[in-house]
Amino acid sequence: MKKSLMALGSVLMLGGVASAQKVAFEEYTLENGLHVILHQDKSAPVVITSVMYHVGAKDENPERTGFAHFFEHLLFEGTKNIGRGEWFKIVSGNGGTNNANTSDDRTYYFEVFPSNNLELGLWMESERLLHPVINQIGVDTQNEVVKEEKRLRVDNQPYGNLFSAVKENMFKKHPYRWAPIGSMEHLDAATLEEFQAFNKKFYVPNNAVLVVAGDIEYDQTIKWVKQYFGSIPKGTTDLKKTVFTEDPITSPIKATYEDPNIQLPMLVTAYRTPSMKTRDAKVLDMISSVLSDGKSSRLYKKIVDQKKMALEIGAFNYSQEDYGVYFIFGLPMAPTTLEGLTKEIDEEITKLQTELISEKDFQKLQNKFENRYVNSNASIEGIAENLATYYLLYGDVNLINTENEIYQSITREEIRDAAKKYLNPNQRLILDYVPAKDKAQN
Image (cartoon, rainbow, N blue to C red; front, side, top):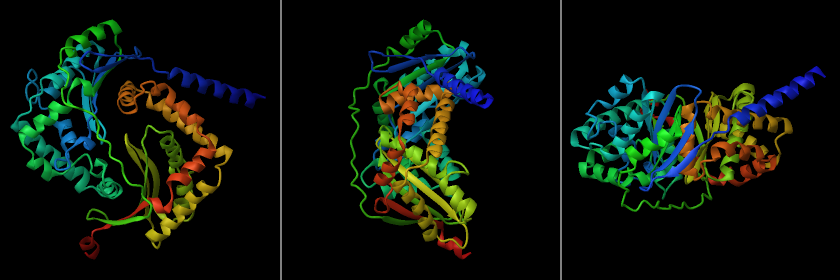
């Protein structure tokens, strides 16, 4: 009886946590098209001001890749009213932090300040939008910064070109075929006018969402938003996204990539999957958890722990706005070959396609995703980025409150059926990611 009461108490506590995670927000759109989302949280005297722009690597000219990521750096150079090199000094001097990041689909900038500097954060983001200084000295400076980042994070990083090697084989028509870091040759060849035109086209209020979250007062925040952003002109360029449709993969794609920074080959199998906005994308998230999330997962337990055929194994669904890629990778342990490792992985996928996972494993899976949901909204920074993402890429801000319900409604049958639909041998890339030949001979 005591154990039953304790179990009931745990369930009630879990329900309380999930309920407490409901995120209240207000949203509206300025006349210039800027969408605004406000979230009040007075648990700490902190505020985040953030802007997400609907521009990423997929919006680039194929002969000028890397522009979206380049702007993530370039737009910290300064503005008409913020001197060159002063941005970071202003932020740190007022007790704040800031950062930015770029994906194939969007670019995101944010500052975290003590709440008494909310107006400063809004002014700075409005300056970035209204008065950026894009000149040759800034372009030349950031060109070197981006080159160094590519050397450190990609070129000289073991397995650093994994995503690029997969994407260039998985996509033939869609701009997802190149990585956000882009081509240094393309950046070198670009003119100042091309950078200025990219800014004029994409960095406009009607291509962005402003999220203000934290210790705020709604009335005052609305007043400041209008004051600093309301007069910014709406963009005049057509921002309609081009639709790229890939032909279905109906026979295996085989490719090899040689990496001079590795000693151990890696097996990679990859499957093209649907947009992150689909229910199937969420089912595939759950499948990746079944296969490789933790030491009790199927692939790890069988291939790494029991058979000791690999040093590492993993699976994940890389969801994006238009398409996704489902990755399965492994580092085989001698004498296991890449072919032998593929065979073992395929056996586990076949089980998913033909057998329902157990009720016990299914409950464990649901608990994991419940926990992920709670953790994703555990910080004000996480909430702000989620609000921006759900609006800009999903078209539904309230998914921040309802997405977990979708995961919890997924059935064991759907998991089996999605594995059948997307994870078939004739629908995949098999990539041998191996040491460079000259390195292997040394």
